[in-house]
Image 1 (tube, helix red, strand yellow):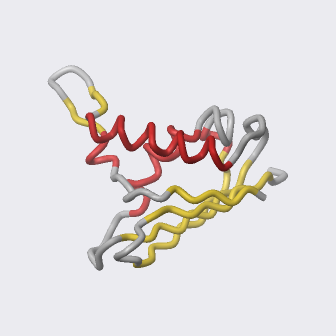
Image 2 (cartoon, rainbow, N blue to C red):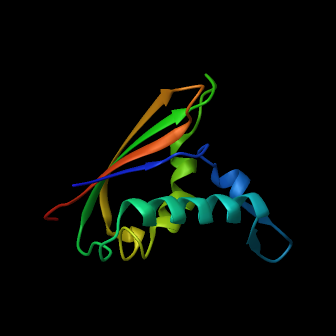
Length: 117
């Protein structure tokens, strides 16, 4: 099992992408978040990306008590970890999500393991 912590305020897909009349683009804050996730993941996991089916447990520690749609936070994070933790995020066959509070240390903790699917 891989244990990974991204010490950064989780970023919603609503903050990551914007729509023009014809397409979507990644915002500056989205690019910065993605690069920071890549950097932190690369420091914590130095092996080849996992292949096969995966199960991921996400624990989102938010900075406030608002109701957050945790699934909106997966897109940019999963894309950032592609090529580092897994080959492609479509390998994730099972996921568990927990929304928690830590005003002083917002972060995402992940447990990633291979499964037989």
